[in-house]
Amino acid sequence: MKSVKAHLALILPLFAILFGAEYLIVFDRIVDNYETKLSAEYSLIVVADKALKPVDISRVDRLIDHVEPVDIDSILHRIRKETSEKNMKKIKSIMPSFYSVKLRHYPDKYTLKRLKEELLAIKGVKSVYLFEKMHDPLYEMLAFMKSNFLIFSLLMFVVGVLLILKQMYVWQLEHRERMQIMALFGAPVWLRSGVLFRLAIIDAFIALLLIVSGMFYLMKRSDLVAFLRDIDIDPQTLFHFNDIGLLAAIGFGISIFGTLVVVIRFKEEL
Amino acid sequence: MPSVIESNRTKLAYPRHEPVIKNATFKVQTGEFVFITGASGSGKSTLLKSMYGAMPPADGELVVGGMEIGKLSSSRLYKLRRHIGVIFQDYKLIGEWSVEKNVMLPLIIAGFPKDVCRAQAQKLLTHVKLSHKSDKFPLELSGGEQQRVAVARALAHNPFLILADEPTGNLDDYSSQVVWELLEKANEELKTTILVVTHHIPEMLSAEYRHLMIENGVLYEIR
Ligand SMILES: Nc1ncnc2c1ncn2[C@@H]1O[C@H](COP(=O)(O)OP(=O)(O)OP(=O)(O)O)[C@@H](O)[C@H]1O
Ligand SMILES: [Mg+2]
Image (cartoon, rainbow over all chains, first blue to last red; front, side, top):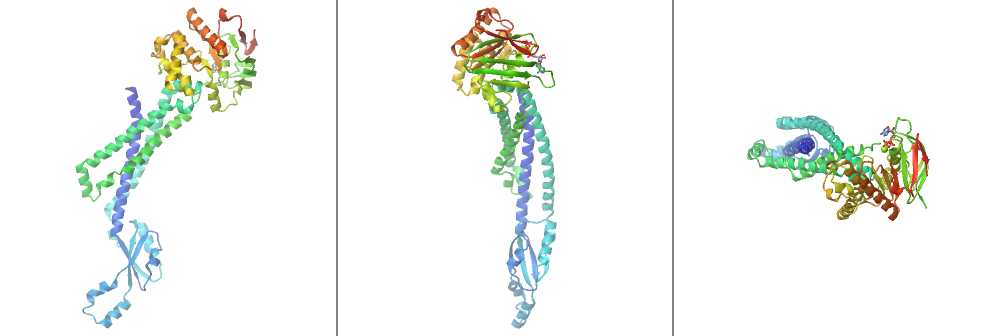
């Protein structure tokens, strides 16, 4: 009973830390996906009173993925019937050039404003249309929540690590007699502290197992999957197999770090 | 004969305390059997502590097995300890380990395979008449039985030096006899150097022993 409690005292904070981490990972992925989707649909228009080379536009900012000239002929096509060939030429010569600018990812408002100024600074550019009303409230909310979860997760991380260190000290007290005696017979550090490391690794493994099976359970819940589809989020973003590696690194990293702290602080008694 | 222990004006003091040993100057050669006596609180256990490196000298020079205690890195000190067998006054058995595993400890540390450790532990437990208790835990044993487990553990890895702190303090005449014979056998057959702190020097060993005594923080050679 006592040992179950001791294990839980390590597993629960570890689980909380991993849960926070997984939440952040998932959120990041959802926001990322959404950004890619938005930026695929989004472009801004640059109007210039002379023909520009697309590279001259795209090199002003790394955010720009590529620039395409807008084909004026297709626009003019519609008025062709009512206009004479001669007038058509005249119209064409006074028509400005249009360029559609595609971005690598969806920017926030401030970046967009900066970009606009950079584009306007290009010689020959008359105006830049941002289509700001494309800015999506759902995206804004996701980004806001992401930054909030980051703070929340950091807090959870700090509290979790403190709880883990505290449990490690309890372990150290429990194991002190044995570690002292082993040291008197010349046992190297790894042998003296072997049990601590074993416990830490087992508990990290259990915490990892809990979180992974929890995520699998969520993914199999049809109501949740349907809900995610409803709000236009791919349920696959919920869990990737790569996450297990990352979570394992975090979980084992923290518990081994905690053990090391305890082991390094071990002092022989006089 | 090379010295196993060379102590030159060794001073021993606990932090923020007056020195317990002010001057210990003595030499012990390989294969010697030495008794150390002194009043309670005179510093006998402290002197042994210094020899297995748990109490670095505050002054002077103490060399054990060719290594100067107090100037050793901790990894060298641990290596030295692996070749010393200590019988502690308070036994220092590991409570959550069986009697057998306790005796196996120095062998586990030396890295012997499990079955070798086990066979050797069984041999030693038979010598101290405790083979029938090998699966018990220390707290299930009487004080004297625990003491004999501690003796078996100190002998298990055939150390070059045995430091025994009142190894028969809790034993009846018969069990004391068993322990003295074991120590004598190790001394004669394996040339193990033995230092024993005791209040009663056994008569059976009285002919050949050396005797040191601590009084007022100074170590005297009695014979
Ligand atoms: N950890 C310690 N911290 C401070 N003083 C100590 C410590 N251990 C022992 N002492 C003091 O050192 C002195 C010598 O103690 P030590 O245990 O060496 O005596 P001893 O000769 O072995 O006595 P005994 O025959 O009773 O075992 C004592 O006065 C004791 O109070
Ligand atoms: Mg003593």
